Amino acid sequence: MTKLANKTLFISGASRGIGLAIAKRAAQDGANIILAAKTAEPHPKLPGTIYTAAEEIEEAGGKAFPLVCDIRSEEQVEDCVEKGAEHFGGIDICVNNASAIQLTNTLQTDMKRYDLMNQINARGTFLTSKKCLPHLLKSENPHIMNLSPPLDMNPKWFSGHVAYTIAKYGMSLCVLGMADEFKEQGVAVNALWPRTAISTAAVKNVLGGEEMANISRTPEIMADAAYVILTKPSKEFTGNFCIDDNLLAENGVTDFSKYASVPFDQLAPDFFVPDDILPPEAAKNS
Image (cartoon, rainbow, N blue to C red; front, side, top):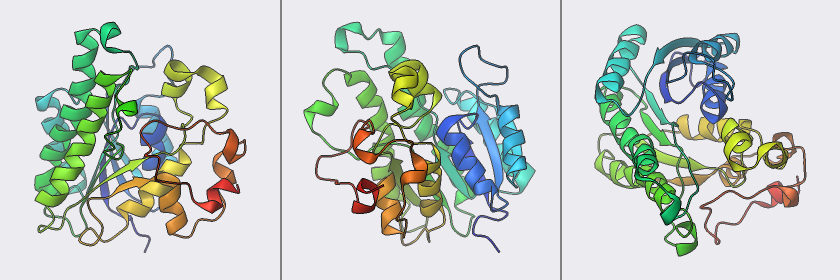
């Protein structure tokens, strides 16, 4: 029996990128995936919809239940959680992947965009976790995993994009608080963050185009790291802020070359990785 066979994952923003990669990795075990995302119709600049994602998940060996969901709406989130739980008979794992980004400084950030980032990142994560928790509390090995960074208060992570950092750190504060709040009830709450840029639509369309994508790792490194977290005993592994390559190295991965087309020293670093969290030797040598 594979580790995530018949487990049900609720994944926000899973129509593409890291969210879809995590879903497909779980699908290899025969997991059930509740796909909650906004993209029902093809986007002119972004690949994939919840329906094409569902096809990829089922091709990978899982079962998919695509649902249109704007995680800014309490009604929509509650409806999707309940429909998904009814469809699959419960929810075992909540993955808060949906996120909005705009790397503008204080004077260049309009409040509409500030609100969007905070509504999706911080509020959306809190809301989705809150609505999934009644089902998670009934699971044998319940997990919440947020795609968010370690809480490093170095001003360099705030300067130049205060609004985005506030929104993203809001997701991490949910990990800090909920991990302790639900520890005695056995619900694990952890964060996962990449050391390097990840080749996603956001990187290609917002952060640097194909040039940046070519010096990024593939989403599969995050999917493999997520799998490690989500298959650990929930009562033993909670409240952790994991960096993808360190976590994989700690769990036996020695070859990181499959995740990138360039050597480690040519990869673009991601934001928010604290200076004292050094990469594993295995990654540096790949």
